[in-house]
Length: 346
Ligand code: ATP
Ligand code: MG
Image (cartoon, rainbow, N blue to C red; front, top):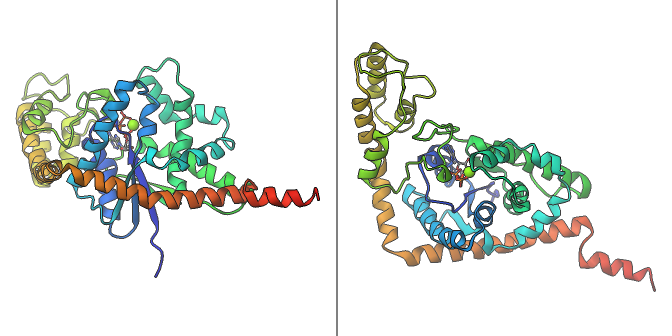
C-alpha cells in the first residue's frame, strides 16, 4: 500500500471558529481528508503565548470543545482525520527546543505575522513564549512529518520558517524531515465585519460558525460598507477591497447570478446597502443551517468529543515519540552515543 501523505494544521483555542477559518483553511481540510492522512491540532500552548492568565487557560479548555464541535459541524470526519490537543503530546516541546537552536532571534523578529499580532493585540512586551511560538509550530508540523499545511495567508511566513528549520536540520544531521508546503485557501484572508484586513477571533470582528440567526443578522447589518455612499442612488464600486459585504457575497453566496446582479445594480446606484445585506443574511443562513444542525447533534453528545480527543492523542503520541527518537539519534543525543563514548574510557 502506498503511504498516504500527511497533512497537519490547527487552531488556537482562543474562541470558536469563524467564517475566515472556513474559507482560509477548513474547506481545504475537508477536501483533503479523503485522500491524505490529516492531523488537526488544537494548539493550547499557542494560546498561552498571548493569554497566560489562569482564567484564560480555563476559558481555553471550553474553546477546545467548541473548536472540536466546529470541526465536526463543518464535516470533519474523526474516522479519517486525527484531532488532538497539543498539550496532550508533550514530546513536541522537546522537538521545538532542539529546533530553537537552529533559528536566530533576528530571524524570528522579522516574521511579519508575529509583528502584526504584536501590533494588533497591542502587546508591549512580547514573552519568550510568543517569540518561540513559530518554532513550536514548526515542531507541530514536523513531528508528524506533514508535507501539506492548509492555512490562511497570514500563516504563510510561519510555514516558510518551518521549511527553513527542516532544511537546516536535514543539512546538519541527515535527511529526516520533509519541507512542508503551505496550502492557502480560496479566500487567503477574509476581512473582518469592521472592514479591518483580517477577521480574527481576538479582534472582535468575527462571524462565528456557531452564531445563531439573530446574531448573524445583527452582525451583517452593522457590517462596514462604503462610507461615501450615503444614499442608495449613488453609484459605487462593489469590487473595492474595503467593501466587505461583497467580499462575503463572493465567498459564501452560492447563487452567483444573484451576486453579479447585485454588483451591477450597485455600480448603477440602483440598490441600497440594506438589500445587499439582507440577501447576504439569507445566503449565510443557507450556508450555516446544515452546519448548525450537525453542531447541535454533537453538542448534545459531549462524550463524543472526549472520545475523539483521547483517540487522537493516543494515535499521535507514538508518532511524535518515534520522530523525536529519530531526531535525537541523528543529532548524536541518544543513549547509544553515550554508550559508544564509554568504550573509549576502557
Ligand atoms: P487569533 O485572533 O486568536 O489569532 P485567529 O482568528 O487568527 O485567532 P487562528 O487560530 O490564529 O485564528 O488561525 C487558525 C487558522 O485559520 C490559520 O490557518 C489562519 O491562517 C486561518 N485564518 C484565521 N483567520 C483567517 C481569515 N480571516 N481568513 C483566512 N484564514 C484565516
Ligand atoms: Mg491568528
